[in-house]
Amino acid sequence: MSFTLLKYGLSKGHPVPRALPAETDLKDSYDIVIVGGGGHGLATAYYLAADHGITNVAVLEKGYVGGGNTGRNTTIIRSNYLTPEGVKFYDESVTLYKDLANDFDMNLMYSERGHFTLAHTDSAIRTMRWRAEVNKHMGIESELVLRDELQKMVPELNYSEDVRYPIMGALFHAPGAIARHDAVAWGYGAGAAKRGVHIHQNTEVTGFEITKANGSPQRVTGVHTNRGTIKAGKVIQCVAGMSGVVSDMAGFKLPLKTIPLQACVSQPLKPFLDAIVVSGSLHVYVSQSSRGELVMGGSTDPYGVYMTRSTLDFKEGLMMHMMELLPYIGEVKLLRQWAGMTDMTPDFAPIMGETPVDDYYIDAGWGTWGFKATPVCGKRNAEMLATGKVPETIQPFALQRFHDFKLVGEKGAASVGH
Amino acid sequence: MKIMPCPLNGPRNISEFAYGGEVLDLPAPDCDNETWIDFVYLENNTAGVVREWWYHTPTAYWFIAERDTRTDEILKTYPANEVFKDRVDFAASEAPAAPAAKE
Image (cartoon, rainbow over all chains, first blue to last red; front, side):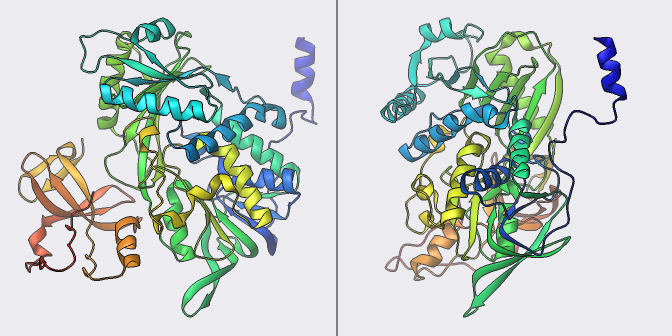
């Protein structure tokens, strides 16, 4: 054993391959340019190559792959949304997630834990019942469980009546899962690169070449970057918090506000919490990672900034509520804190599909639900780019819905109030 | 703790304040639907210096703050009457006017 290890250490042909191939020069022209090398962008590239055989594709990433919100979320995957459109969409995502580790031949540590959204008020119970009925109608495992039953299922919580928000029940979603989020980006990136897609890191988009008709933007033909200009057949932007900045370059505005969402993890503890626990009234979601850390998040910041700074105010608020839910963690120390820039829509549903500029598509408005949608976004974006038609699953999320007053109200299914 | 310099109450903890959206020009009450839709839904979402409405909750006081959204720095705050000098009357018989404050 030790001899094998020594041989491995001295070997020149290192047996572990790079996840992504070495950087290449930008080509003069690509059929499809994907702006943003996070989970959504890479998944789009992956399915373009794997499902549609389109490989003359470039993914442009300002920083490094998966360095944005893909690596900053709390990794929760679920499909117990409120609207039929939302439920159908996220159910497809969960189904794709389950086979992803096999597709990539990479361990995503996909772990089904059961997802419990706590209700502390009568009106919350009513919303949970509503969500459970919509979910069941759409074939999703989702149940309202009341306090006594819940206490048997998740005994780790504080069921005292002597707190600000006593627990009355929960929406139980058995397929609720967590996964290793970086691996999702790496898996999609490696899979796309293996099939011939170019992934350009440290490549920032600085503008677009757009033809004009009567003074208004018409069709995108190229992309300016800090490494030169490339011609593009079609462009899609998948840039989360920077959506407004990028769409400005393309010449249109979005109904989005960029607001930081903070999260943190505790020091590693022995496994004690199997379930994913969410409380809207307490503005908390918590799960225990396979490393033993408690992964904790709360609501978005009270106002928008284009920064990923952490604040003490947020930690104080979050910990106050964590102590109400899990009173025995008072001595536990925080290990890391961070933030991501979320792009929030007024109706808490995403923006996907066509834009006012021809051949320019969008994948934005991911607020606080982007990671769990990664596979379905990639799959449907790829279908849209390959066929030129917007797939039925994502039609309800069109940018045009704001002009048609056809909003998709998902606020009631957001993890916590924002 | 982040401090907001309130024009009425002096420097206070920012948790005492509520964000009230960007300072925008109200469209004319008789404008077309498209203009109203854009006004209601679209955001400038500027990465840079913005001029915004802020509200000090305990004293029910609205004012204007200039803030850099790239650095989270509050550059300047002043009472709203430094910008809105003229009284605006909306005739009751015309289209009902929306209040300027959003959300």
